[in-house]
Length: 123
Image: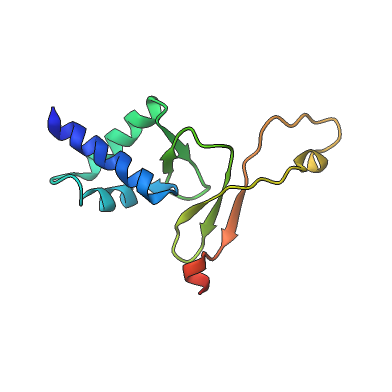
């Protein structure tokens, strides 16, 4: 079915071009330029399928809608702009988290979200 392939390609293209995690609504709005007749339900179906296929990674932030980003990226964290509500990738990671770990605990992973204003909003 070419239409479904066109819609799926549009979703993937939008996420690749954005180079940051996007909500389903952000994907929907941007993908309409590449797939005529695209509906929000189709976007959700494609996002869910692509997460299941491990082509996308789910980015969960407390109290926020899920975001999605392409899989296969190196370990990184995120910055959430409180003004525009966009989420950006932070490529660096602090290396001294074990120092923060309580005595007797074994750290095996971590997730870090920075909050503030993005470059455009701070402008």
